[in-house]
Image (cartoon, rainbow, N blue to C red):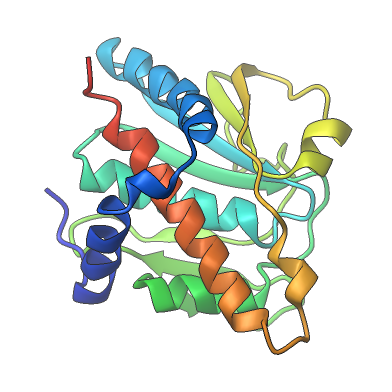
Length: 209
């Protein structure tokens, strides 16, 4: 069992109690990810998940972090999550803030155009280093992984992901649409919660027969 910070524990409890908010057609798509994870788990293999979005700035980072926390929450071992884009930009500050408000402890390690962040989600799990990168960056696996496309643009513009074992489109509306508006914070919060809910649901299904 993972030892989550109190804020993240509360968010996870809230999200796992609201799986009924996920439409049935979304659940069926998420179960494709559950099946991949289950098959790798039963084979005793490392479960590499790469979340891909165009700029690797918002949704793919949120999904990477939530998937890692979901694996810990359901005690699924050997899960390694990554993210990337069809181009590199930066982990967008409003997305960082939304994840911090969800309970992740995120600290910037360098003040650059494309900052690196250290993310803690459990006191007994390794820190995750995140930054914006291409999906084929050297930090990401080159084989035996599942590519989860978190935006339709990446799904359409990235028709071939070398080395992929499984490719699944689990796309989300871009919170960028609310940038520099009064709705910015609430929109990012809503997207972080939606992604968290769905990643937790996907991992909850791994042990379901």
